[in-house]
Length: 125
Image (cartoon, rainbow, N blue to C red; front, side, top):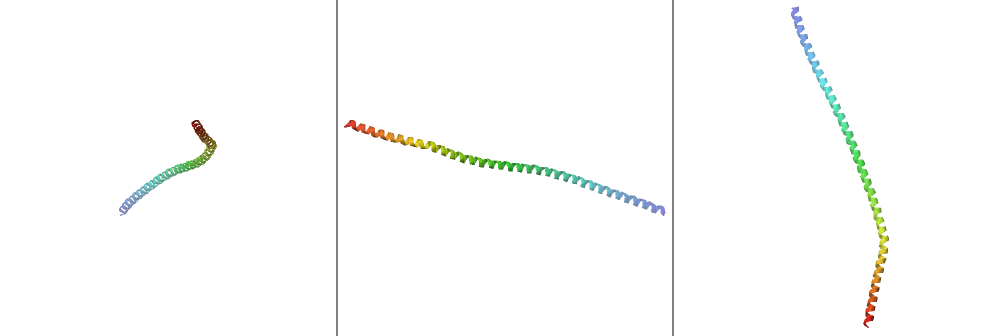
């Protein structure tokens, strides 16, 4: 009877040890999977951080470029206004003498016509 109990105890212990070993192997596999998943998540987080950094730099670059363009537009508008004022002043400097010359030519033509008319009427008499 001792031998039967010892055999049963041996097989029960063996079965229990095998079950424990399977449990530990399952637990070890689960831990390894969790560790692999954690590494994968960490890698993905690093990639996302790098992409975020690149996008942030692109956004800042675009914002800087947009600001520079707006500044250039404002500078060009100021230059255009200055150029318009300068052109208006230059035109005024040339227009006034031209108008005086045109007026003088018109007066000369009228006087010339009047003289021609007087000369023509003097010859007819």
